[in-house]
Image (cartoon, rainbow, N blue to C red; front, side, top):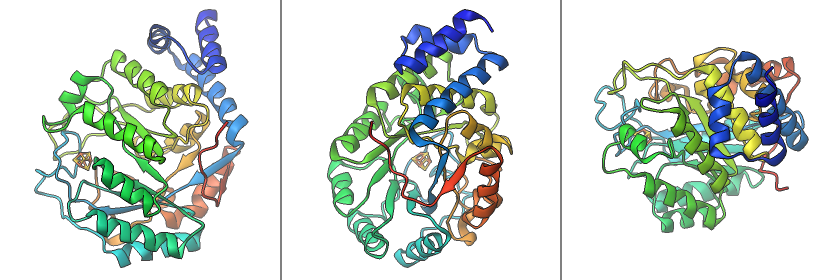
Length: 350
Ligand code: SF4
């Protein structure tokens, strides 16, 4: 392996930072062998903090209604082909009961930006979950809301909030989103979530239409500056009923590279091996873990709606991607030397 590349990777592992030009050089000069070195390095850094533990989250997709029209998303509002649904409080609580019995101690309530879920409704749902399962964490992934709304949901007991920034490059953001959405506002929401005290998650798609190497480097620099507790990274996968239907998908290798870099930039980060990674390649989840990821989020949504929450085509929702497949997931993780732990799995402070 060329000495310079390895030296730079080692510098990243040691300082948890690099100049933007250095990150770009690493990215542009990557190859299979060098990537392997980066993954191993990221894995070691992750093991120093989280050992061999894999945290699991039960994902409950509460609504596929969305007021937004992001060009990459299968449940965007102008997709008329989607069968829309939303879950009631009692359905959500049933999912939590099922998940708790299986060993989940974090529930992720994810959905489009659906006006039905007012602060009042959500606060009631969150406090019901926390009352029944006081030893569990609640993560929200419900898009952009006002600061007051974030505060109210936090006060109701929500612990974490996921809001991917998708790209830290303004021009690229414009290519992915209609004009009513802005990167500036997205970033403001992330700042507010952090200030309120949420364990906050940002993140982006790898290989989305119009993404250049420079865009990716901006993502890395933005994440380093924001220092979120969680980062969600998955390959872009096209959906047949969106304007990006004919665009090429992101690749496994590029996504693994990004996971490893993010682990090295933010050693403590909670980093999922996403469903999209398991969809792009059946070995994607395991490889994600071996490149520095430490979280998996199996699907806990009711079976009857799983087919209706498709942000991209061919989404994996059975086997290890489902809560019912937890045993299978445990075996898969053991096969690469890791253990699924039944715990809240909070972010670890230095
Ligand atoms: S990406 Fe999120 S905000 Fe955008 S259309 Fe899809 S669900 Fe709505």
